[in-house]
Length: 390
Ligand code: FAD
Image 1 (cartoon, rainbow, N blue to C red):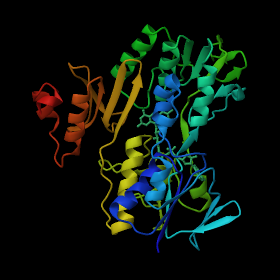
Image 2 (cartoon, rainbow, N blue to C red; image 1 turned 90 degrees about the vertical axis):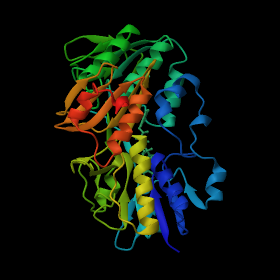
Image 3 (spheres, rainbow, N blue to C red; image 1 turned 120 degrees about the vertical axis):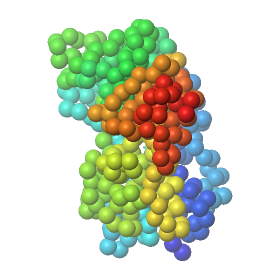
Image 4 (cartoon, protein in one colour; image 1 turned 180 degrees about the vertical axis):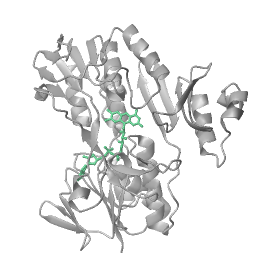
């Protein structure tokens, strides 16, 4: 029978296996992951898990699930290479044949050229989070490199637990790659109110066991340093197999790579944004799971429906829940609404809605963005940019 091999047993890899079965795929499924243990969710690693330490709550499906659905889960095992000519993957000294291969290899922490970086901890895997939690069991002075989502979520938890926290960021504002400046300002204000020190325009170049050195000459003392300066997609397997990569494994609108027998999904894939056709790579649970569903449909039914899901994302920092619906590019216009949300526009087209503690507007934005012909800017303006009135 047909055999689908999935490389990477994270959020997207697991979803691909599950969706193949729900779509009615009757062939063999092998899900191979480098990390030990059952597939788990990462978002709580920088949120609830750091507070509670409840690792079991992270598990996505129990062991019995894999048996019940005839999914062969192989963990603690790395796929070393792909032999495309014969349709095999190599795992140590073993080989495994495939009819279809799904690359769901995710990302790893970016380790920029910073002297002494061995003194900094990562926050990507459950193992990383376990170590950090242990470090936080006594009063700490923390320095965080990077004011992205993960750095700031960690900062919020560490501060709430009573630790001292300084965040150093190369850009002039937090979450600069992902959110508009009014939203970034709201979050910066909240972190300052919590007593966290924020240092912007400071690309850290040196770290030692006593803290971090800012480029302006200041030394920030710290006995816990977290590196949260972004990630790199795991493309090496695909690259070595001759598949085109460009800050991710390049796929078409069907999430298929240049080789029709190989698909890629989630954090490691770049795919054409349905609205603009621009190649994008998204780091979100939504993208990983919706990609997986699209690929599973194609493999099972042979249908080639282009991927068109509306992107969405969230980040919890202290009592602020950020939600983003849609996908804005940095040059998109930015309209601040009375309800505190920010709408992004490309010309007449709504591209994204950024909300804080407003799930109603977020859900409405997702609905509007999914429409074949969404209302244009003038219509939204007449409603006072209140999406709930549309
Ligand atoms: P992953 O879930 O990362 O899985 C990839 C897996 O592939 C890994 O387990 C890796 O070990 C394995 N692998 C790699 N290479 C090989 C190989 N050669 N052989 C075998 N296995 C291999 N997203 C949100 O939407 N909201 C959030 O609030 C949020 N918070 C986050 C907080 C943290 C701390 C982190 C780290 C991420 C967060 N994310 C969040 C991002 C989200 O977790 C990812 O987008 C999602 O997990 C991507 O799924 P994936 O399947 O592409 O990759």
